[in-house]
Image (cartoon, rainbow, N blue to C red; front, side):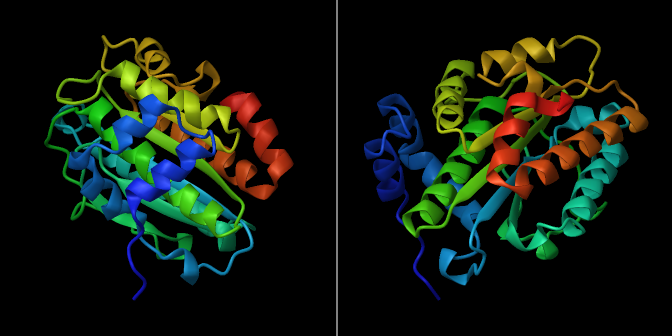
Length: 262
């Protein structure tokens, strides 16, 4: 079994290459999030035969308000449509996927798309809080570490990430919107990352404002209403974008600029 990568080294290398600002490197090198990031890294780079890689990373909301809003089945079904679409895409051999719930539970670390675990009643029980900023930092740190790992091995890598919530942050203890925005800005500057967000209507939260404060571009924000149909449609839009982004480097650039409307 190959040795787990050294996160500090990966982030230091990204910093030295100008991919991470000093502020971002400091956030990611915090000792209390290293183990959480490590838990998502999954498959060894040496075990991936693809000549280029697309990292798809998804963070479904598992807060109690999802259940309270009767959206548990909608989120589960919508997520599973993404898995179905990616598993049948022509680029499936290049796609690695990782899913971590909003409260830190790793459904599975990075693995080939055919090994993705579908969400079910058994593994998805939304009954927790909303540490949106803290866990977005962990998720983006995982994306960065994995993409740096591939880059170090000479494998071109592009990433597309989806953050899902039905409320504003309530339970973060380390990070704030500005912390997340610092990371997002660095990643978008590198031009091989797409970061998207979905805010499921709770009747009061201005999700465009929440996500813009986190540095996410307007064109990559989805704000479905509180219905099964709208939530499913939002997930379908994401899967279409992920497939487009996976098809070629030129497609990735066009998709990144166009957002969900492309």
